[in-house]
Length: 317
Image: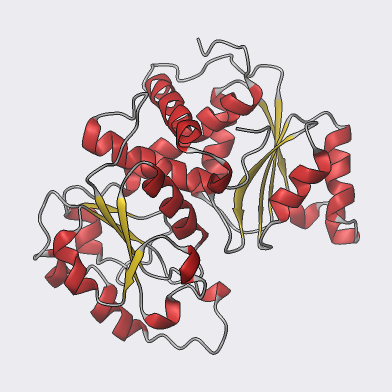
């Protein structure tokens, strides 16, 4: 693992396993009466989010604080960016302030990687989601949540061998789907993408998975149902998807849920569009819906990432 976390494609299976094993340690920290360690005391983490976020932003903030780091939450709408300052100059300003890590979310594919190349080793850059490209910490926390569910923890040899995961929904516009696919498959899971044809990616030859537009045909073979929301904010106006038709064909409705075994796991990165990807009754009352566990694990995963990048030679405590 380099000085940055930009995309899970940059990590091999051992590096992913190392981060998931570290996550085990920080899950334990989160269960303490005082869930805080001094591991990153004296370090500073800056967060710049150019897109809206609830779970990722709050969990990165909490993760840094639980490691005793100082946090700068950079408000893009009230900064000098609104006066015409370039992002490059803003990053140089952050570097001059002596920040140790920069957590960034942006609508442009590849921008966090470009920043990482510019700052080299002076700041650790962590991609909190860039366009349609990648969301590496989401992929890590989703994989960790499945390891935890099926095996109790990740351990040193985290594995999803023998697990069949269906990623269902707006694959075309989902950076989460891309990162989940890498994380799951690196740990040995079988992954099938399920989406209407207009929401399937155009570069399928680069995706080492099966894909179908028929959810009901694949549903009986799944161990994990991974749901994605329809991202209207990223869609071209020519994409015509009827919500009623989508719910009928791809939604986990009450009637469809009755045919799913209770031991099948349901995950969703959030935000959930109730009544579209999944019925409220199913989300709130069905066993093995792990949405809240994903949120909880997101803090531990992001603690692991920050510690791995900034805590070399330091004991967790």
